[in-house]
Amino acid sequence: QIKVSAKFRVTVPAATLLLLPTGVGAAMASEQVLLKYPVNWFDTCTHLLIFGSILRWCDSAQEIMYPEDSPNLAIQTLHNMWLGGKDGVAAIFKTNRVRLYQRHAEFQECTQVIIFPRLQSCGRRTYMCSFEVFDDSEPRKLLAQVETTIIATNKEHTKSVEIPNREAICEYIKNQPEQKSGLGRTSFAPPPENSEEVFVYKFQVRAIDCDSLGHVNNTMYGNLAEEARDFAATHGGYGKFNHLAKKEAMECMISYDGQAVPRDEITVKTWAQQHADNSEKVEFRFDFLVREKVVTRSSLLVETQRQEKVSKL
Image (cartoon, rainbow, N blue to C red; front, top):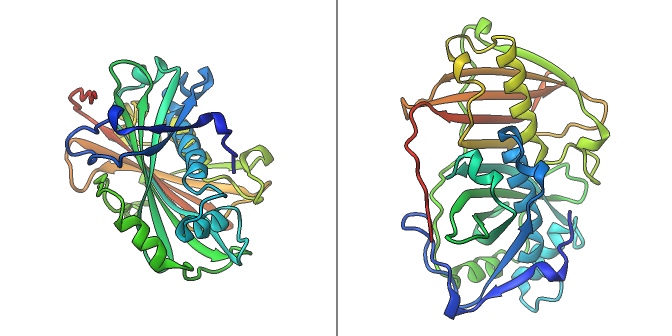
């Protein structure tokens, strides 16, 4: 986890409310915590890095959602889970979904982003956070939306458990202004029946890909999917879709089903197909396997004919 310095904790008073575009979110509370995050050149210098950078920013933003000194029982509970199981219950990532609303060139112009984190829902064993990412310039543009699902586990991360004080967490969510990001449930296309349509790529996990928990950090898979796509495209691995394989992806979905640790050999099985629900999208799919077991699934969506969508405040 990255501890956010106090200088990055800001509040937006009602007099300077930032209103989200129609269909993206609803009006915010009279006081809303946000994170202003500086953008380094390497964060956005190529489109292959965008998803990994956004996931890192939002990962950091979760820290300010659960301040240690909060008197609220719901926030205390989530703080203890987030820090690794102070009360015997820990939290790990289950899914991430990112949708971009701007092209790569817009990200390259950013020197600082504003992130609005929000606790979205809470089930028996999982809770979901959503994030809106804006550039910090005038006029402000919505850059991306993110939805993250967290699952409660024991301290050893070997089994899921029920979230403690769930009623307090649900009550806390209920008292916030309603806000639906509308990204929908994360789902993945199955592998094609013809194995010749699947490209196989292997690499070894580096220690620098991993966090203090000893496994590949959740944010890395955005970069790893882009790396696998670029490698497969270079070798003509996507057949009739290969001409789209180096085009900017506008959406990334990741599901974490297991863990990879330093020196593991990861086998990536990747393929491309027309999106099941949208003929103007092509889905590039990735299964990450360790010892023949899928540890992570991911997809990158490319829009074949995308109209420019610029969301401004």
